[in-house]
Image (cartoon, rainbow, N blue to C red; front, side, top):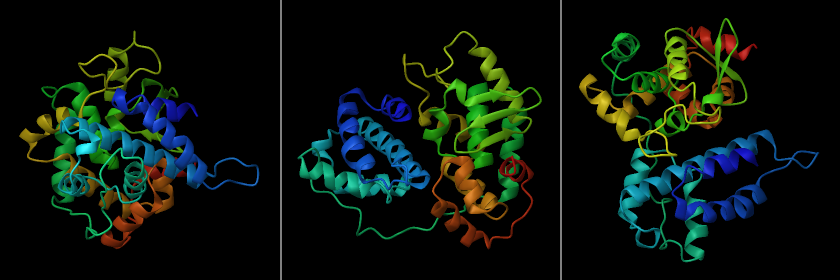
Length: 288
């Protein structure tokens, strides 16, 4: 599948063949099929999320300067506290341990953690306003951070976006992440068009947020440094945005539009009380 090849291309080079093998013989082989024999929509979403998560995990391990064979249980526990990986990491760790790629590691005994909402919606709105208007902050950092702050997207997913995932529809600019196009509102749309203009000579499938290293996108650490003066972290923006979205829009609509699992937003909906407030951009998107 083209999307799998593209996603695996974002992993450290020495792990790409392993990911190809795992994707073919584990993720795709175990995926449920529809009556035509194709991978079902729900299974495809899980495979994509698993593969993206594994790319993030392997990149993180490389940043720790730790070979996979030397990974320790404490490092796995640290990774779990930063990301939601219970749906895909245990299966990979079991598979990798059987082949002596990693030690025998486990996350099943770790307590499940509820998302922490540590900043208010008012604080989130202040950050969104600054990101939308402060031109002293780098354009790519503003745009990427707004996508996180408004839609709760993981930084790794935002920074892995390609130019051709933005589609200019004349009166609107669509972002293609999940099964439904997401209509970007101003000022996000205006910033996105500026970013596209800066990359006008890049190939259509080039990174929307190219990094300094050739062939690689920006790293989440780039965003962390630029958010630090605003007094917020990536996870705080993500969690508060998801909390607000889950109280306004049905979990299934969010999952389809933003390419999450339904369970992710059901969890936030439980925390928010599912108040179903007004979130017109996603409600309009869901009816298209």
